[in-house]
Structures are given as C-alpha cells and as structure tokens.
Image (cartoon, rainbow, N blue to C red; front, side, top):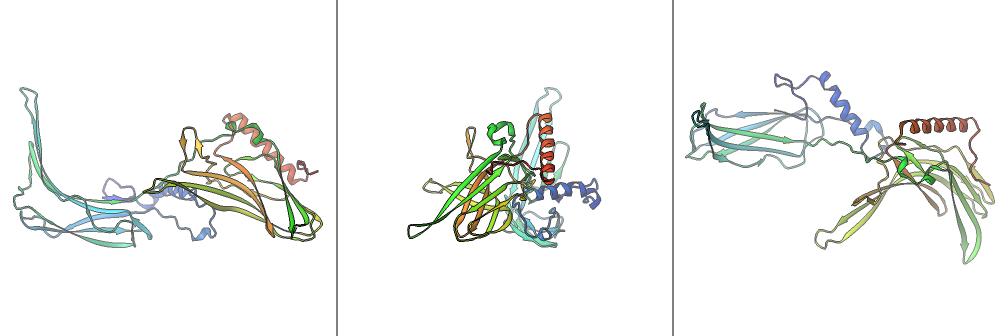
Length: 370
C-alpha cells in the first residue's frame, strides 16, 4: 500500500520524473494559500507527503487461542510529515454464497469471527521524521475461531487492514465579477479626511488627507495606484507617512455552552509604501505609489451572501498613517474575475494598460486635487 502518492502496476511508487506533474499542482496550490505575505520566500518548503506501509508477521500461521504479533513498518521519505491518523484493524470474516441454477435464487451468508475495531498505533497529528518506523500490533485470536479456508462457495479470511490518513488541501475561490457591483465602483473616486490638532481646547491646525483612485473595484493580481495629497496646516511636521494595503478578516463563532455569538477581527498587511515626512505649513503630493493585490488573495467576502451567512468575512482597505496619531481608511473591493463578457473584459484590460502607460509617460489622469 502506498499512501500520499501514485502507485505503478508493479506496486512500487512512480519515479520522480512521473510525479512531477502532481507535485507541480501541489506546489501551485501551496503558493495560493494564505498567508499572502511571506517575509522570507526561501524559508518556505513545499513537500508532497509520501509514506509507504508494510506489515511483518512473526508467524505466518497462528493457532486459535494464541496472540497475533506483527509490526507495521512506515517508510517516510519527506521531512516534516504529519500523520493525522495511523490505525490497524484485525478482522476475521466468513462468507458463503451461491446461485441455485434451478430456481435462480441467490443464497449468501456472512459471519464475523473477529473484529478489533480501529487500533490507534500512534497519537493523532504526530510528526514523522524521515526513515523507517515500527509500530507493534498484538491481538488475541479467540479459541473458537475457525480455520482459514478458500473455496468457490465460501471463504474464511483473516486480515490486517492498516490505514494511514493524510490530508491534501485544495483551494476554492468564490466567483465574483465587476458586473455584480454598482457602477460607481468602476468610476474615479476621491476620499478626503480632515484631522484637527488641539491642545487644551486650543486649535493647533488642520491636516487634510486626500486619496484619489481611478476605481475602487479590482481583481486578484491587479496593481492599485492611488494618488495622495497631504496638506499640513499645523506647525508640527508629520513623520513616517505610510500608505498600506490591508486585508481585514472578521470571524464569528458561537460559545460551546451558552450558544452566544462572538466576533473577532484580524488585520493582515499585504504591502506598504513608506512616503516620508510632511513639514509643517506645507503640502505634499505622492503620485508614484503601486500596491499589488496578490494573485492568491481571496476575493472580498461579505457577511451575507444570498441566504447564507458567512462566518468569515474578508474586506480590503487602503490605510494612510502618520506620526503623530494620523490614521484614515478607504475601502476597496476585490473580485475573482473581471467582467463576465470576454470582449468587455478584454477591452477593459486594454484601457487599463494604456492608462498605466500614459501615467508612466507623465500624462496621467488628473483626479480632483483642486
């Protein structure tokens, strides 16, 4: 038995050259699974868990009333393999059956002589280092157990079933398109916020933050290119000005005994751009900002999608922060696809690339910064 990989007709695992296709699929799968941001990509190891099972019996024949002793051998080829479940089941079953050729009646009977159930050979979710590992099995055979027998009309068979369970995840993306969104999400938008600095109820000045975007709806893998203007009317300079693309995830769970719902919020930074500082009584404009939405990022997932209620909701925001105490947010929508109509989507991609090229040449669209 070969668990975790393909098996050739001879019973031996396929050579590495034949496993390349499946390994590539799991490698692509692993790159699409959250977390989105990895600080050190070289530290991530992608393995396809493989394990080979063999059984060694101390004696080929066991007398009824004696103890069956065996060893389950597990050969692990990959490091950091986790066994979710490793069990063995010893069963003895007798079956008889035939068809009466004169009456066409079917006669069959099955009787169980031995069943140990699933014997847990190691703790669940146990790490399995590379190499060969032995797990002993001891089962008492009942004294009244009949002998093994093979015939055309009936058999009595005793066998050990070993099972090694390993989970292989796959990714599902919810289907969403630009067509499902209101039209205003595909139009240029300006977001403005004002922060008043006060000390002992005395005004110290106002800071105006204005963010302009060509649209607020994007697809996975697209680049968000906001234009930012910070007008500092106070005497105090702003430091560490940063614009960040973030994913906000809200989880909902019910308490086990009280059956009361509770929500938890988590924030994950996808990409940040450090803008620098803004001196007092000055205005700074930042128009060379690029924030990329990862290809493997999950699309926006609202709290209610039709009749069903999502226990995990996902939203994206642009967040502008500065010291001291400046913070404002702007919501974005991320879809899994563009437009449903292929021609309309191709036209949209063409215009998007052309606008980006014009912006690189210094002919970018001027949003309402006046």
